[in-house]
Length: 361
Image 1 (cartoon, rainbow, N blue to C red):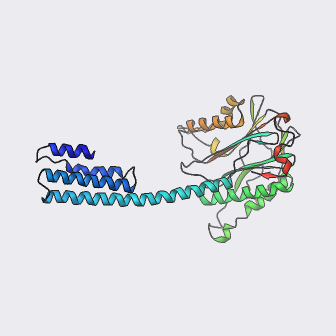
Image 2 (cartoon, rainbow, N blue to C red):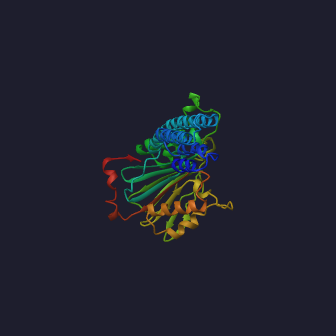
Image 3 (tube, rainbow, N blue to C red):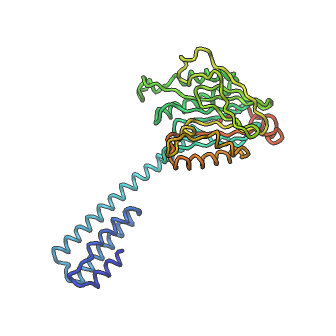
């Protein structure tokens, strides 16, 4: 740009001036380059303007001097702009690294296999730059079973992240202690009902918080699964190509609203045979809408992918969900896909993770 404008002005009659266009060069450079490169381009543009002035014998005129002053001022301004932007960009990189570390602590990647189960997990953030949110999941390997949880904290922002982090931590700790599933959920209820930030003044103590969740036990040596549903969307079981929601007759209220639960935590049992596939998800999946406002038909869609491995199924669902919504989700979404494998394919009835006791993910 600098060369073209300078040559055009040098070859033009003295009463036709293109030199003022040189100010665009540093301004455009600032949109994609750093401060040093922008400064160099500004100096080249000023040099081109001086060459034009010398060539036309106009360097001492007020018009030429005003153009030079304006070009110097604009170049200095965009260099300062680049310095500020680069500093903010470095801060943003640091914040993203902290957010990614927080996500890894909150949502540790699940292993590909636990005991007789093959697993895959995914987290889709509604905000393009988000790394953490209020959705949660976790898994704990005990001596002869695998315990899992998936949940969704009410609201968004720091409050939801705090509630999700507290519940996942409580699950990883309580699931190791050999509690029954109702006792485990009761322990999580106590944790969800106590928020230390209420007393630290970080968020209003009067704000009602709760977490919808499903906690599951999947034993190694029995073709069953047991679960307690606390106001969460029911898991989907794929058996013999058919998709069935695992509905509980007496679901419990969300965690954090324990005062509404006067009948205890009912355990529901379902058959879970070798080769069956189980999909856990949050309402960010089923409440996603297309352009016409129609909810995403998750159960209908996965019926076409029942032969997929867990990681393949989640990839199919994610790609289809983003296509369905036009690439924008209204809420965060988390999913876990679980397939029960034959004992011979899983390293034994107890799996490799059981040899060293309980492990949390």
